[in-house]
Length: 78
Image (cartoon, rainbow, N blue to C red):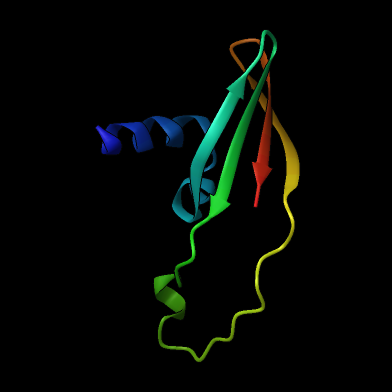
């Protein structure tokens, strides 16, 4: 079930969002859809051999995305 959910999200969101962020919650109003995404704390495979140091995460930002079925879509990204 989880795999089919991820495939559905890939149709709605950019693939990079699905690869590096997880959907933590959502709120659906009459005309607005809010999707809350949190960055996955993992090192991409192309950087696993490099020496990295974490600088932490940024505060949440909100991005307006393309409408889905007549709903305005806002991505809240942490």
